[in-house]
Picture: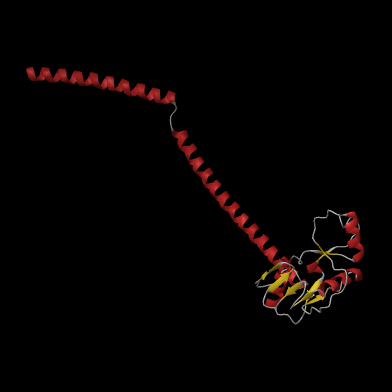
Length: 219
């Protein structure tokens, strides 16, 4: 809606860069502090667009971060992204001037402690994911690796299922071949009749043999 209305809104993490003086671990901690404090993905707008949002989108569900004027602090751990409209740069400058390592509305300390109004706590994190071009590139690469891993797992699952289906089809073919060798009911009845006739004939022969044996014994 904001974009359609011509309002330029940027997630906070796209409006700043880490200071060169920060180590990777300090960058990660600072990013997590901003996330926990609710600033990391809050939208930054110019003063003009902020007033427009209040008038035109009073029920906007996105989180905005806006400070009317400059504060008294100089927060050295973040710098303003160069490729921003000048009005938005001023908004970011106002925000950064209200962040401190000591006492103020938003406190972010090097040891991971943060306080934003009534909210406070400690954070830990190994690497940043959003602030800075390299961090976002690393995040994107990690997402791509995860997607590639999922695709490979799905491919392996499909291969396993295909092998399982091939085995079942082979078993089914063997069963069909074995079944085709089984005589049908008509053939079975005919065989049983033949066996019965042979049994009768055999019994007749046995009887005749017994009779001959008796005659021989008498003589």
